[in-house]
Length: 70
Figure 1 (cartoon, rainbow, N blue to C red):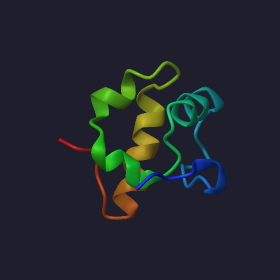
Figure 2 (figure 1 turned 120 degrees about the horizontal axis):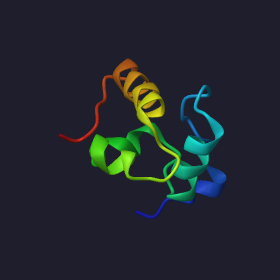
Figure 3 (figure 1 turned 45 degrees about the horizontal axis):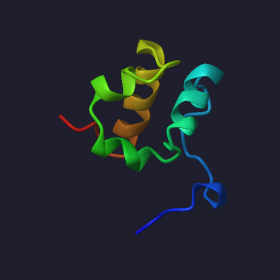
């Protein structure tokens, strides 16, 4: 199933810094559920992502009972 992200609202944490948000959206990540397919290491490799942004995503995932792939 192909998702059309332009018509889907992002549910990324609102407190994400702009460089991190641009990095994620530029790579096509706009929904928290997408991160269950990725490891933390993979996300940190994106230019603009840092430990603080990763922690914000981790918390948002945890709030939904989700987590990064191990």
